Length: 124
Image (cartoon, rainbow, N blue to C red; front, side, top):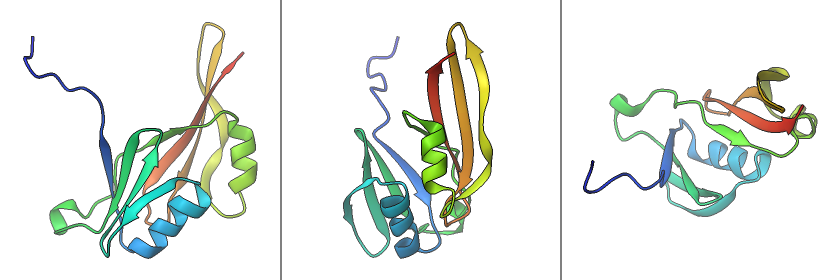
């Protein structure tokens, strides 16, 4: 047993190439609330988890981020809402069915070539 266990995810960092362009995408297209920003970073609130967009401090950190799965209530509506302005990779589709619940996903690219996804869990 650990005497000082991890409590929760506090922040997720996403490397970007252009901080202004990326900030606009996450704020305007995805609708995340901007907490504050600097010349090299932007912090967003995602229901208590901070998303940090950052220009990499050095080449070691200049690579695409992990896939972040953003939960939405209606994935088909979100896809329709953003399909003209967001680069989706395919269409919303079922990836798993557990009991009476289907998990739907659709992947997309942000303006910095990071791949993320919207996900939705619905009754089958």
